[in-house]
Amino acid sequence: MTAELRVIEGDITALAVDAIVNAANGTLLGGGGVDGAIHRAAGPGLLEECRGIGGCPTGEARITAGHALPARYVIHTVGPVWRGGGAGEPGLLAACYRQSLRLAARHDVRSIAFPAISTGVYGYPLEAASEIAVATVRDVLSEAPAIEKVVFCCFGAEVARLYEMILDSAR
Ligand code: AR6
Image 1: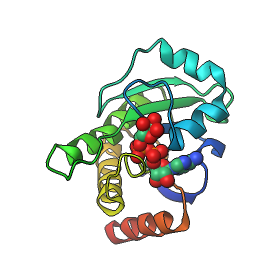
Image 2: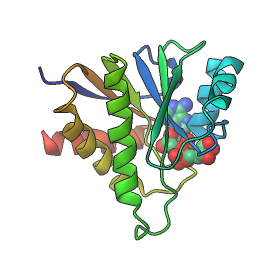
Image 3: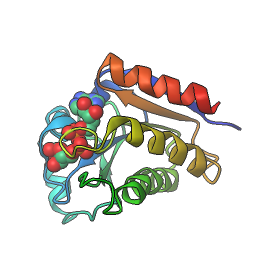
């Protein structure tokens, strides 16, 4: 079966999927952007569970419960800070999508939503980041047949249009 790839514009914390992905930092102790929104919506139990994990290196992923979120799980991944592109950023960003999907598959996740990792506070250029996101997800899905739906959750109409364009051009 081929998984459905969808673009949704809006707040990832509202999505009723099996897992949402958090663009976290290495401490996993919360922050601004989508990370802050997820912790606010999930409630204090999420921070408590994250404390027990003890952090996450860039390009890797860790899983927790969704607590008060509609999603059953939160997959926390740490994107690279953009330093001009010569510091391994593309490979690290691809690793975030790859490791998140693999972790999801191991927990029987069928539907998962990603934010545009690294493209906010971490400064990764949006177009390059979204191309990596789509290409990596397509690639990893071939080894994760149980995943039925992947949502690219876009904060703003402009981001959503860009993702639609990339998905269309690669179809
Ligand atoms: N739903 C979906 N997408 C969102 C939401 C939301 N509620 N809020 C923001 N975005 P960012 P990063 C988009 O900055 O660049 C945190 O402080 C946002 O518009 O959240 O990976 C962490 O603790 C952008 O497109 O994550 C780290 O320190 C995308 O999510 C640092 O920021 C990612 O922006 C991580 O920076």
